[in-house]
Length: 264
Ligand code: BJW
Ligand code: ZN
Image 1 (cartoon, helix red, strand yellow):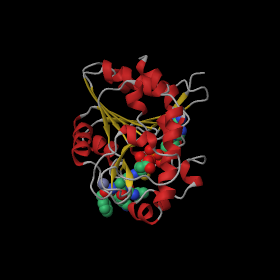
Image 2 (tube, protein in one colour; image 1 turned 90 degrees about the horizontal axis):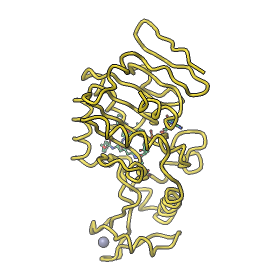
Image 3 (spheres, rainbow, N blue to C red; image 1 turned 60 degrees about the vertical axis):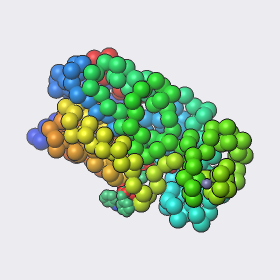
Image 4 (cartoon, rainbow, N blue to C red; image 1 turned 120 degrees about the vertical axis):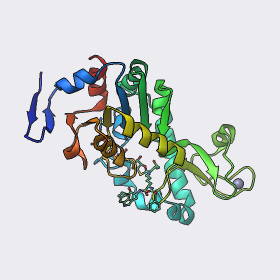
């Protein structure tokens, strides 16, 4: 069924849909050509349809586990076994799932647009497994781990020998291994964040996909793109903190909407 698009005087568009057949604006259709500079920011919602729980939805991970108890350095040092178990559980989930049509659509976009930047907050590695080539992982990747004392990265073989539960030790100095992810209060990888900001500033079309846009500085990227003159489109089944600032909102799951854009 074709959707209706509401538009108020500010030019804000909200598509209502039932079967996820979206109405695409003429601006977006015009921008859908290989020479358009495109930047995409993805969040946990993009992996939701693969079976990876999001952080802040009702069935999200953080309904079962309090984030402030887990995703920061103090919590880790106070209770490394609990935090390591949580990450081992999430690694297991990620290993058992597959990229979905949303991830695959983003691979096609990378091939279609001459200037395309994929920025992801996701730590699950599903974009790479789908075949995206250049990925700016601003919050790291749970499949890598390094030592809190000497900084040595654990080898894949060492990580595979570790049991599902219990903390893991550095091979070199025996101190604690931590996941190579960005916890609250930690800086994002400087060079990766700089590239993401440059792409957001330089793009003509920005897609903010499957993110609640609640965590900074990543959530600032769509706003940076908008302030630099880009057409900014949000793709999400729910409104977010930044919906009102978007040029256009496509309401629905990303695995249904991204393939429709690719088919334009
Ligand atoms: C679907 C869907 C479907 C569902 N299809 N969509 C004020 C201003 C600026 C900054 C701050 C501030 N106050 C505090 C800060 C700092 C803090 C921050 O932003 N806090 C906010 C909570 C306010 N930021 C930081 O600490 C960052 N570092 C930093 O700022 O350094 C400088 C500094 C240092 C010291 C002191 C002060 C500043 C670091 C942030 C690191 C975030 N890390 C995490 C954990 C990673 C490790 C792990 O995975 O365990 O990253 S938190 C978590 O949130 C994870 C995610 O990447 C991130 C974003 O979540 P995301 O992806 O948006 O998921 P959800 O669940 O929130 O949303 C899912 C969305 O999908 C929903 O909208 C659904 O509707 C949608 N959805 N199904 C499409 N099928
Ligand atoms: Zn070490």
